[in-house]
Structure formats: C-alpha cells, structure tokens
Image (cartoon, rainbow, N blue to C red; front, side, top):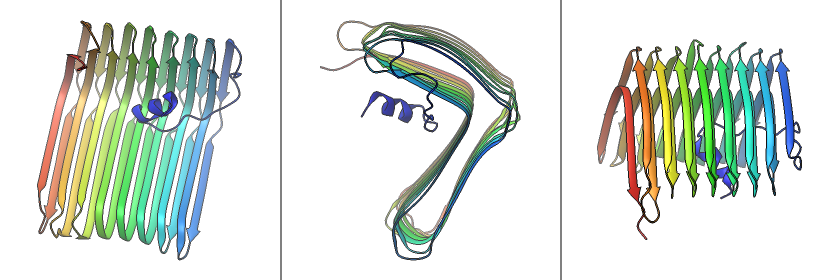
Length: 406
C-alpha cells in the first residue's frame, strides 16, 4: 500500500481531490483560493434488474489543492476560504445487483501535500465560513452479494505525507459552518453489507517515514453541528457492518524512524452527534457489527523508532452524543456487537522502540464543558452471542510506550 493510501485510511475522512495548483516538479508553490458560490454534485444511478455491478459516486469540493514532489522537496504556502455550501449526493436504485457501491464525499476546503526523498515545508490556512457541508449516500436494491455505502463530509480537510524527508507543517483551520454525513441502505437480501458515515468540521492527517517531524496545528470549530448518520434496513441479512463517526476537530499524526515534535491546539463549541441504526427482518448465521463514535476534539500521535514530544491543549463546550441500535426479528444463531462511544476531548500518544529506548514526553491540557451522552440498544431473537457497550467520557488521555519484539 502506498504512503498516500495509508494516510487516507488513517484519517479516516474521505479522499482529498487533486487540483493543478501545486506543480508536480516544483520546489516552491504558492496557492490562494476563494470560493463564494455553492458547489453541488448529484448522481442518480438506476439499474432495474440483473446488473453485475452498480456504482454511484459523487464528489464535491469548494476549494481543492494538491501537490507532490516524487524525488525532492517542496516548500508550499496555501490559503483557502470557502463561503458557499458544499453538497454531494449519490443514489443507487436497482433490482438484483450483485455488487453495489455508493460513495459520497463533500469537503469545503481540501488540501494534500506529499514528498519523496526530500523535505516538506508547509504553511497552510483553511477557513469555512459560509454554507453547510453535506454528503449523502443512499442505496435501495433488492438482492445482492455485496453492498457498500459510504458518506464522508468535512469543512476543512488537510493531509500531508513525507517519505525519506523531514516534515514541517504549520496548519490553521477555522470553521463556523456545519457538517453532515448521511448513509441510508434499504435492501431485501444481501450477503455482505457495509455502511459508513463520517463527519468532521476540521480534520488533519499526516503520515511520514524516515523523517524528522515538526508539526503544529490549530483547529477552531464554532459551527452548529457535526453529524454522522448510518441507517440500514434489510429484510434478510447475513454479515452486516455499520458505523458512524462524528468529530468537531480531529488530528492524526504518525511517523516512523525519526524524532517527532507535535503541537496541537483544538477548540470546539460545536454539537457532535453519531447515530447508527441497523434493522433486520431475518438474520442468518452471520455477524452484525454496529458502532457509533462521537468526539469533540481528538488527537492521535504515534512514532516508531524514536522519541516524541507531544503538546496538546483541548477545549470543548459543545455537546457530544453517540447512539448505536440493533434490531432483528430472528437471529438464527448470528453474533452481534454494538458499541457506542462519546468523548469530549481525547488524546492518545504512542511510542514504539525497535531497539533501545524511545521516550514519550507529553503535556496535555483538557477542558470539557459539554454534555456527553452515549446510548446503545440490542433487540434480537435467537442470537448466538450478544455484546453491547456504551461509554461516555468527558476527558480522555492515553500514553503508551512499548518496545517492538524482534
């Protein structure tokens, strides 16, 4: 898997659009983008019967910039402001579809920067001060083998990566709008179903290897809501996975084989809600996994092979709500896992040493003034194993230092 692919998987949040504002072979790039208008992508795919595969994908971005140097360094500055609304609608309707896929991605501001065999120096600002961001993925089919529906939305999203080069980042993200991700699945009989919804106001993800990291980020969210909803209804299901993730501010920084210094400032007054619901009529010998995760401010920092200094301050005054629900009329021996987690502020710092000692030096300040609520429910007849958990935490800080086994 490529470095950018790993970065996209860790950040969790949707792909970042490519645009030509950063030249591929340039060592210096300056980008300025201002969008006042609304941006909307809408795709409706109808296949009446007997399709081998059906795909509906919609992607919308107010401002998007991408830059990379495949064999050298990149010095870049970028300023993005989006004052319009951003919508992405993807809808798939069909009869019998063997493999059905629905993807909706909406971002007000999107940035991506990467280097290989050279340093990345980036100063960037992202501002979303206008309309809301909405990603909607809907699937309605009769029968199928696999069905995947995913919606992801973000007001500001930035991603950086460096391979065999130092990484220096100064990022500022401000948003006063709302972000919504909605996934809806309605089917008769599908063997493998995956439904996901992810919403973030400000998101930053970074991955680097053989790199010295100096990353600082400031994220401020003052909008009304960050909401992710995943809803699955099937008459008959076998293996079903449904998950919703909602955050106001989120940062994930991972590094390997180099010293890392990370400084984060996160502030949110935004209400956060993650809601996942699965309803099955008949459920046969499969596994159902239902989860909802909501967090006001989140930072995950990891380093393998060397020391890491972590300095994070978090303030959350918005409410955080997570709800996960599973209903099945007839379980017929299937297993079900339901997990609901709501956190005001969360920090995780992890250091792993390949040989010798690697130290983690962390300073974390967390203040939560919002109401944190986590709920879950399971109702099923004839299930095999049933597991349910609900966790509500105001402030959470976890520090881990381990040594990798040779």
